[in-house]
Image (cartoon, rainbow, N blue to C red; front, side, top):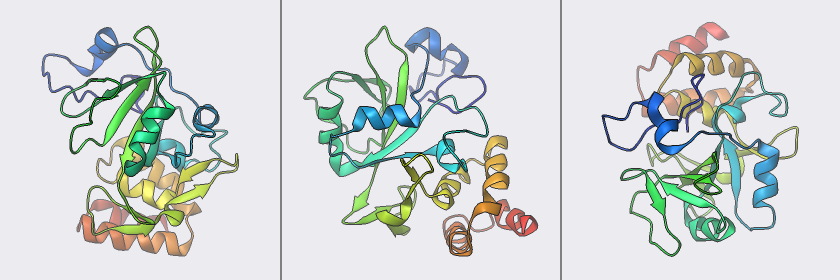
Length: 222
């Protein structure tokens, strides 16, 4: 599900005849949960989770700077069975290879990174679950496994007391697409980062994407 003004999810179905603006007609609309509702849903499940994406870059997620058309929630990849049990009353859909339901008891495909969640076929999409690789106590950047951080440094507690992805990590993901809204998130977030967070972002981006235009852009931001 996308965080775009058109309010349509990303389309990983692999069917070129289905355009993004057709998605709600084929698969239904998205009415995402807010972070507090995610917390209520996963309370007491034992699942380690944290909000990522645009929500995690807000100075105060309880009062978002811009509209968010979806909510991305990271969970440990090695806890996927616990996630499925916790959401047994919901419909889970895999996004790879192709968009299709994940039926109870069905094994997940190798390499699956993402599942969409809704209550049933008559209900809207609620959230996007990102299955995140973790090695022991370390978070592993799924796009480049050379990049690792203690999971405790990847997560921060927001003003609302809920777990969010550290903003410098969120910006690393944003840099992959660098859309207009991503640039806006960079410009808004950069002044709020402390020196260690800025240094980690710059050093990591230089390793994963040498020559990225954001390396020069942040110099102008100060």
